[in-house]
Length: 369
Image 1 (tube, rainbow, N blue to C red):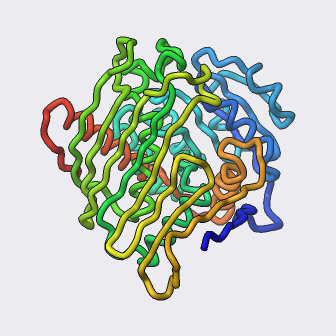
Image 2: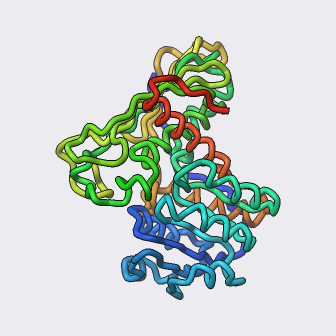
Image 3: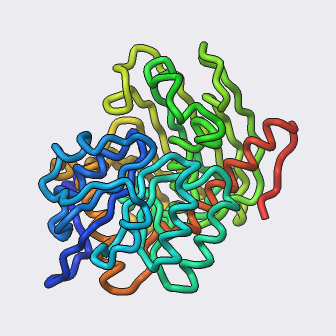
């Protein structure tokens, strides 16, 4: 039996609801234009006000959305504008944490690009300010919103797989030569790390999110195996110990030849699996597919099942799920609720990245406190 499920999309926006004026802060970043596309599609976004930093050209965005009303390069002017309801921050890793701290002091809600900082400790002060003021400082881990991830998380939570023994993730993409080796993503002072902070962070977050658990110990090997002489890792293998006993792994790398150039449309090879004493769930590299099995009687399964999702087409970053991610962030602000994934998730992911780099350098496993 292979049931086919059509995912039509779901959000939690209540109606009627206020329209939002968004402050969009960007330095040159591969995802900034994608976020503008998303804001253009979200009905509850009324206006966009740009703040362009570090040589970011506003013309890159003004042709994408009629909602853009003003452009400037004054960070303080934008953040202290009382007409701005929330901020989207899409900047280099080394620039993000100071902006978050300024925004939190000003009482602004923020959705920021991952990972949000060079070091986990850089996010501690913004976290403390936001917690004291009940502000949303939330991170762009929007892969949590994919329909297959929602289902596998639900299956784990309901105990369909029994006690979870192992969790496996892979995110491999195009080689560095297709991605401009001189890009700031490969500059250690500006990015902090390489593949782990760019793509690996998503899957570290997904492992913790789906398992509702935290990594407590890491053993890792990382290296620079592309032809380019990079300052950051382009290949990483992580062994992860979770607090409930699950053993996990992550393989991340810039490794695929034959890819189109750039950061849009590059080749990807991904995998995500959870395996327990009573069943398993697997999300293969092919999008919108989920395979699972459970011995639990209430599931009444006759072998391995396949779910195939058919999301509504959307030009938003992350598709229709990406739209709903932004909508639900705005709805959390409207309801004075804390939107997840919050800055605490970014802190935990960065701690795991830091432990991985330390483990590879020392040849020893690292305990995360």
